Each structure stands twice: as structure tokens, then as C-alpha cells.
Image 1 (tube, rainbow, N blue to C red):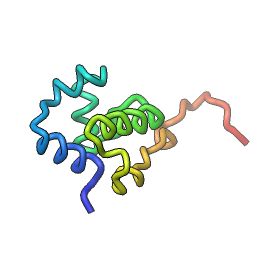
Image 2 (image 1 turned 90 degrees about the vertical axis):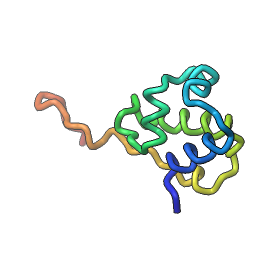
Image 3 (image 1 turned 45 degrees about the vertical axis):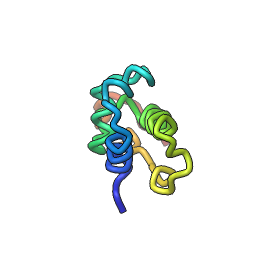
Image 4 (image 1 turned 60 degrees about the vertical axis):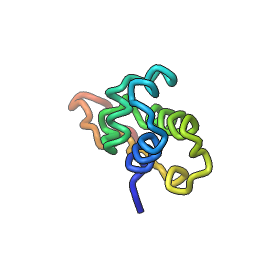
Length: 90
């Protein structure tokens, strides 16, 4: 099954849309759209934004009901290292 990024990229190319066009329409930087298309979600500002950006991008391409997109689960920020002085949550 193709990744979410592959699905979006393939659909965009099929529709002969340029990433700059999508960026202007959605007001999402080209750099972030490129990260989505290459499944580099760690380059996005957070999982909440990643989900919103993917949803907006998919909606623009008419892929709202696409199964592969509904399974999208942005990586959480839990893997980021904590400051050694940060209080632990218990």
C-alpha cells in the first residue's frame, strides 16, 4: 500500500498541479508540503499540524474519503529528548 505522501504526490501529479500552486492555495509552505509528500513528518511543527495539513491537502485534491489517508497517524513528539532539568510526569 502506498504511503500517504506517495498518494498525495501521485494525485497532485495526475491533476498536473504544481506544489507552489498548492502552497499558495492552502497557505502552507512548499517546504512543509514537500515534507508531507516525502513522509518526513518530523520536519513538520507537530503532529496536530501534520494531521491538519494532510487533511487540507487531501481535501484540495478531492481525496477526503481515501482509505490510505484515513489511516494517517502523524508521529507524536514523544520521541524528542527532554531537557535534563525538566520535571518528570508521574
